[in-house]
Image (cartoon, rainbow, N blue to C red):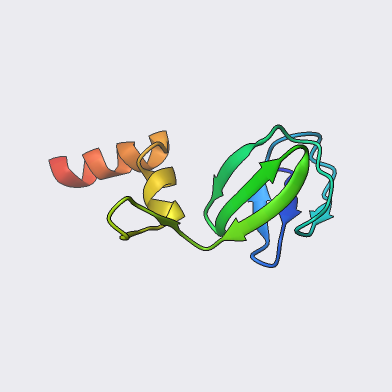
Length: 89
């Protein structure tokens, strides 16, 4: 478990910044760096210190859908380990 700030109507939980259990809406000033943040619930975009957009999925260059879970799970060390165990059994 951890302490998360929540972003947007998708209620994306990001453990960045001060984590004061804040709830941010699109248009709010936030305390995290500019960027595109991927959470299990969706994708948040921050520009000039303002939460400017949220999306349920990303789109690849061919118009295909990329779910946030695909991105997160491919980098999750626990998930990777569990896949290895399952394959080796």
